[in-house]
Length: 119
Image 1 (cartoon, rainbow, N blue to C red):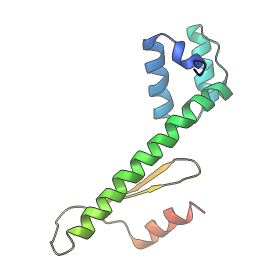
Image 2: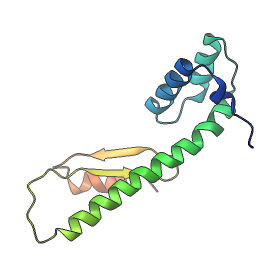
Image 3: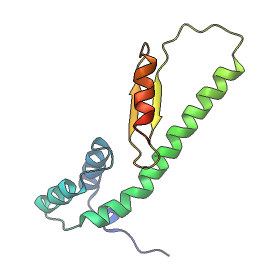
Image 4: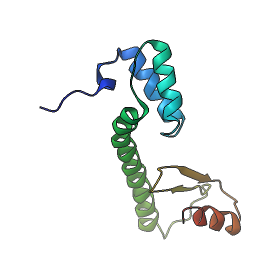
């Protein structure tokens, strides 16, 4: 049986607030999360936090990719139908997990610039 991670043994309220903070920071700023935990009376290092949340971040990227794949699959299946829905492009950087959302009506230059940002 694997050993419990320090984040797992935090009180539920602290763990939930920490997770909210990590999600809101797009899985970054671990030094800030470490300092916040220390203010709460818990000593968990930034490297330990990063190890714990890396698996969650990878899972989130997989979920987002699956949703996008399903959306593309649905649109291909319904290609004979006209849809009057706005088009939103969501680009996920596989290296960092950062998400770029480009709203309907964006120019092709804006979309290309966002994709080039992944290189």
